[in-house]
Length: 227
Image: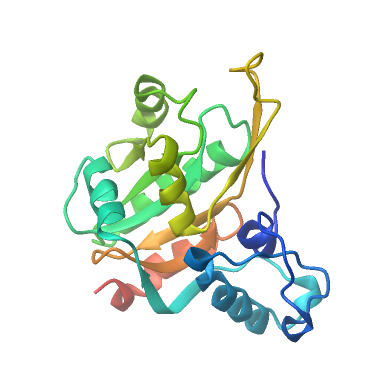
């Protein structure tokens, strides 16, 4: 299930608290953990770009100050990639039983990876499952293989997964998952995705569904960004 079609909600719907009227939003619920305070800067940037805080629409955001990932996270992303090495990466989160957001997200990832290849930009994509209980390695391999070698997966469990998600400010909500229902449950997650540079820094945050065209344009026309 998709958390929201609006980028602002994709970024912030999971945490509770108050941004305050300084941002122009009176009822935005946000709680900033130490590892996700960066999103306040992202939100402010989006608000400024939108020109209408009360009617905020999806928009990719190029971070003025790239956010470095932990070395362990960078190594996991590189290890997950079939091509490995120091190259640009698209990172998205989801689960294989997702009926709407994830198939559309894979369409976006596949499109962007193909454009990058045409432009000579070293770029691949990593899909991170938020549902490792159902998404086994076998399931994930079968799910990602049709999209080619440039789209791979990362499967983490327990604290390792929580720590990795927290670093990106990503969460997932599980409905009706309990001892009596270990398989037929639903997961709600955002469509937020990330562009990571070869040094392991978050450079762009975007909505994988609504910002596909703007990201495609960036790959086609802003080649200097990837130098």
